[in-house]
Image 1: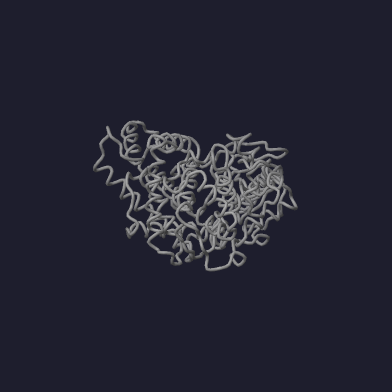
Image 2: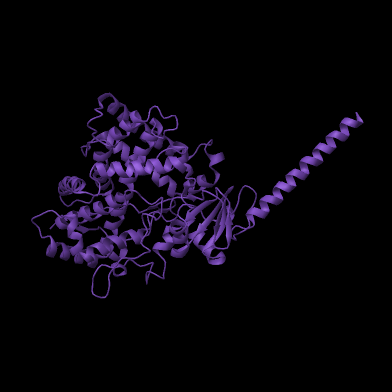
Length: 494
């Protein structure tokens, strides 16, 4: 009895020593991380953060700890990078080390490491390479997609004309149009604007994205291990994401039944053909799960990001009617009324190009960027980031870096114009991020924003029920993305 008691004591002592050594080693490793506020167990720095203003909360911490600091979002330990220099050093100068994808808890509930946007390692590289090549094959960045955008812009003009100058919310007008552009690439066809399934899909995308920008969404990012099991708005977001996956899965099933390997019709067909080619490869990344979720990545991002940008842009042009008037003047001078705008017109329209860039800069659509992760033990500046460390590249802090933009909190197209009125590029223009995980649809988005905006302004002038000074251009929510306030407007024929 005594012997067994001594054995138990010795075992407990041994385990205690091992635990203390483990803690000591961890403290030694994590002690080389950037400085930051002291966290509480499990809660982390939650009490020092405002989940309704997460971006501003993190920027406030940076005022004390500098452009590179560590913060604990609940149990999640994250290194935050602020300003152009820090973000560029990580994502460009040390691109490979910072090329991993961090957690996006709401979307991870569905994606679980699959699909081009939320995967890591060799899977991410293969899916990104395939996606870029296939998008190019279906005309993205070429004349083919430009004609498709022009055609869709024509449908949108007719829809706005049918409102006969009445006050309308432009949200679903815009999302339907942008959704149809990416749909022709992903599915080989467009939706009719009154299609009930389309409106349901757009509602799911809008709802799930807006959840990630709310206080509840930011709380879920911190405490998802517990909250995913509890009732709350996150459960509705999960239903919406599941509905989107189910829709894509049905599209894939249809394509499987009607596939002609010699004549791919769309992105899904091309992926299915690649799956057949690699069916004997036991390590292939071209499987059904990656097909469905990569297609969903393209469909979601190709709809919500650009439509939200233009919706916010309309609000800004009504707030600043002098800016809208100058764009009208440039359109009239360069394009006129009798032909559709072309992407090549952009080179002769520096003011319009500056306005589009300033809209993207000002609205700060993805203020914290998508979370990255270091792929191996990494020395960054004077710090040590162990493999797997999550990193937030604060894109908003780059877009508002005072070293590049004279009045970063003001909407002013002069930020992108030189003293001669010519368009001026800026290294700090990073709405699509930079480095190895930058947005693969950047070229398509740029073309869409120019062609849709110029076509709409060629045909209409905007009118708000409020006077310009009363229009509130501050965002409704700021989280994973920035969501503009709801508003109505009139499209008055020119």
